[in-house]
Every structure is written in structure tokens, then in C-alpha cells.
Image 1 (tube, rainbow, N blue to C red):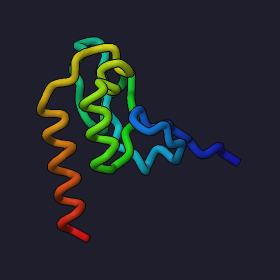
Image 2: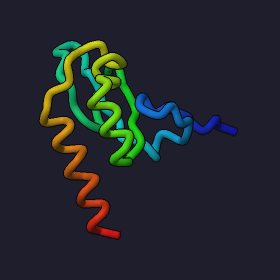
Image 3: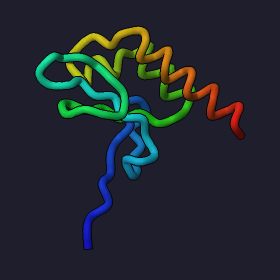
Length: 88
């Protein structure tokens, strides 16, 4: 039996299956930060407004990925949050 891959949110510390999180990746070798795909250092974030806010204000993603996070990453995640809210 394969183990379920558990990940931890960088904002709240919640442990859950990785499919429940957004994945933010600092790709190798170009150090580009992107969402959901790529190989390199990854950080995970709950799909909630609160965790997004904490991650941005306290620079949790930047600390975890050890690099600055472009503003467009936060803009894209906020848009996904709004789309998900409007979909429900």
C-alpha cells in the first residue's frame, strides 16, 4: 500500500493531502517561481483567504522558498480564490 503524500501549509501549519493545497514552486535552474508545476523547491498553501493573507503579510512563501515571491503569484492565487467562491 502506498503512503498518502501529506504536506504542511506554510501559513497555518495544517497537515493534509497535497491535493488540498496550492503548490508554489521555485524551479531549478532558473529560479523562476510558478504555480502547480515544475521541479524544484516547493511550498504548499491552504486554499483560503486567511492563509493567503498570512503568507503574504508574514512572507511565509518567500522564507520557505528562499527567494522573493513575484506579486503576480499572489494576484493569481487571489483570482483563483475569487473564482472558487463565485463557483460555489
